[in-house]
Amino acid sequence: MNKLNVLGIMSGTSLDGADFVKIKISKKNLKCEYVGMQSFRFPADLKKKLLACAQNEKTVYSLSAVNHELGKFYADCFNDLKSKLKKVDLIGLHGQTVFHEGKKSTLQIGEPSYLSLVSKKPVVSNFRAGDIAAEGHGAPLAPFFHEVVFGKKNKTVSIHNLGGISNLSLIKNNKLSLAFDTGPANMLIDEEIRRYTNGKRNFDENGLFASRGKVNTELLIRMLNFKYFAEAPPKSCGREQFGKDFYATFQNELTLLPLNDRLATLTELTVQSIAKSYQRFCKPYPSEIIFCGGGAKNNYMMKRLQDELASSKVVTIESLGWPSESVEGAAFALLAACRVWHIPSNLAQSTGANKKVVLGQITDLMPR
Image (cartoon, rainbow, N blue to C red; front, side, top):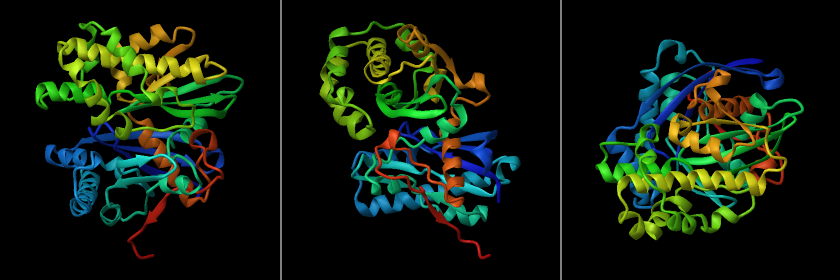
């Protein structure tokens, strides 16, 4: 088939839930058209289990059980989708990352068989392993989608995702020049407010708390000296770098601060690490930076980013007709289509892989 309706499913390091994004894709030029999306929050008990898995607090027996429980969750969500989103030819399932170490190993859980069974469609999953086999980091993979959809002729632009982790794709004259994870985006902020409110709040809406706080400059400088920020790309990160161990390093100083000051400092960590990433690594500097992901809805964070990235035009992806949280789901929909069309979809400029490979593995339970 030269045209496919594909559903992409993404759940990221923030552990908020899963975004189901439907797009139409043409094999010629890989033209992508947004159709619609629907999001589902993880039940509290499942979210707790997923966090424990990601923090290496589960036995292999428990990890296997959560793998199947999450697979059933995705299938139940598919059953609850709006009817127009169910009419698809193919599904791309990222799964939930519970471990990732670039160039060495990666593990995304969420057994795809349940989804294939209820949808009666092929499901492509386990996208990152193929790139690691080709000596890449296995991440970030979304830059392939960024290049195809948002590249501009004779311009240098950056697509910047603010999820749990922050990552950028620098695209020069329609071709990806560089892509990497800059560090934390929302992950540390979200964890701090969840910890303080005992789970009653999951994020700092519009950066309201942070905007009322004062940045602890001395603590911020110490955080910015963390070795990951100075490493040259390609590079990728997650909870392994910016999870509980990172927090524990600075916990004593953080807990002495009022909540607003804590969130102001953690938000500024995101802002400054992003700004320094552009200054250190992005040449040429982009004329336009397009932000997407949940953090693009944080008004305070976006205002600070506009201040620090003033030499670029800063916009959100909403202005281009894509909901801010649709991009990563759409990216894995495109990767799934490329899998069935046998089109290589990893980019050496992004992952450092030594060869182009076709990403993803197909689960198809339906007899033909």
